[in-house]
Length: 302
Image 1 (cartoon, rainbow, N blue to C red):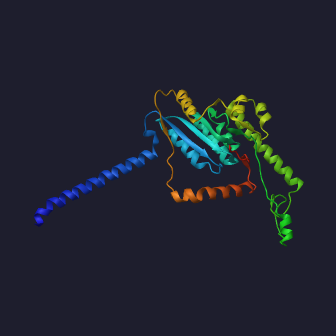
Image 2: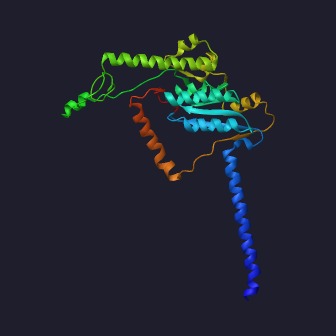
């Protein structure tokens, strides 16, 4: 009986080894293909969504580099729906976008809102497509502070601060800002705004003087933005895809490739993510950070 079972056991053993071998090979191939996207082929357009307040540049830059190196991806679309955000992250993504345009065509497709730092990023693309009702522009920079000096007096709390220099506690909660502090921050914001103006002028190939005329934080509709040169054409995301196909000389159908999304709990997304993001955004607004961000709210209701 044992001798009869031996061939079956041997077959099962060989089958198990084969499955393990081919499974390992497939895992290595899939892992290798993710690490070296240049091995993929075909007519593809990479789509990188940029949504919400811009706080970090690393993920977007990584996606730009990955799509830039992928030989199968012929063009890249930045699908932007954002009020802007941090100065540093906006500038970093803009720079990487400009670098990417040297290798592939990059089109910015503007959603309902692409303002301030979000427009800063869009200005680095080869072309910008916006809806007629898109809110965009808001070229400028802001800092916000909260002062609770009077509240502290009412509840009998006094803060003692020891500092190494006059401006070390600038923007402190416990006191009003001095005239010298306001002037220093005003000069700082003017410098950061000028960097914004320079980036838009370079990215849009516009005279710097023309950009300066509208660099007062004002917001524009997509249709107004097209008239003054901030946008190239009016249309939706599919129009941006068609433009990308034309600019990349793609014939026929094209596959849209999106970045791989990290797996997260559905319960987390539904119940907590939006709430926590909203709280963090509110805190950021009053943390004294330099921001290319529009402060308004935008919606259409009956």
